[in-house]
Image 1: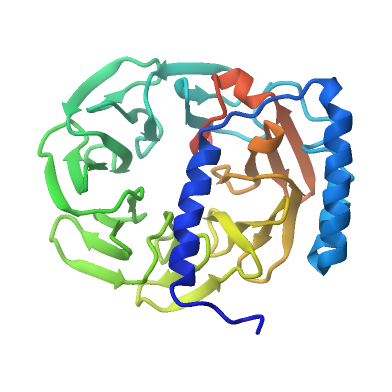
Image 2 (image 1 turned 90 degrees about the vertical axis):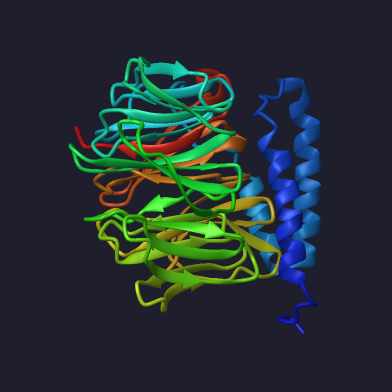
Length: 365
């Protein structure tokens, strides 16, 4: 009876995940004083012992809890990025740029943000305003809309478009702030432009994923399901679309055929998934028991594992480095596969006024 699922089980699990995820997002990592260490350790060992008796997966929990949370010998601060480029991050204290040398610049009190196509400017949202600005935080133009969020910018040096959500609608506006128009109704999921020529975008309307050419209005692809996706992402060549859901992740080709999938079971679920730049390979974060694991969506190969919660997977522009955000440890962990190397940076929330989300790792220069 292991594979039996009650009626509407996935929908109920999704609603529960919404509540738990929202509650977790409101907390901030707190360093425990040393006087709390012994009671916590005793409780953790006891819990691990019970888990080991109850199930085989529990034995892996015992192994994990023997180790400290976080990467050993992590740098005490984010002194530099291990690869080229710049990070754009948003958190409780606003939006920041992090350069390769570790220097940080706060752009302002923005809630969500994105790079322009060539990493020169930024589009960001705050309150009832969409704005574009330079890397010093100087505002170029603003557009007043009701609670805008999830900006996505695409195009060439001379012709660009910014997609964003406002209320329950997907908008597209030119890069100079003109010609704003509504494309369709949309669910609260970040839209993503398909890489390459033209202006083709993937977005969610309810639990249905739609791929549309915003110039002609033509619908390129439509995939429905019972559960709203959490994230959409294109492969670098625009040939594959990743539709991430905690309990049912799919990778589709442009004909709508599933080429890879993941359906967690046995009280596990996925937290994030991402394509490796320049490839059709994808990685995902699996949460199980008291730990997390990053693994290949295609062959199940484990890339990195640890105790507590991993939140995001973000690749460097050249795909050589993978950034794993680890709120439980208050760390960012950078993993390189060839040759294998792991670099940790601690006290992340201290440096950004709260633990931030990474919008993207942009540009090789």
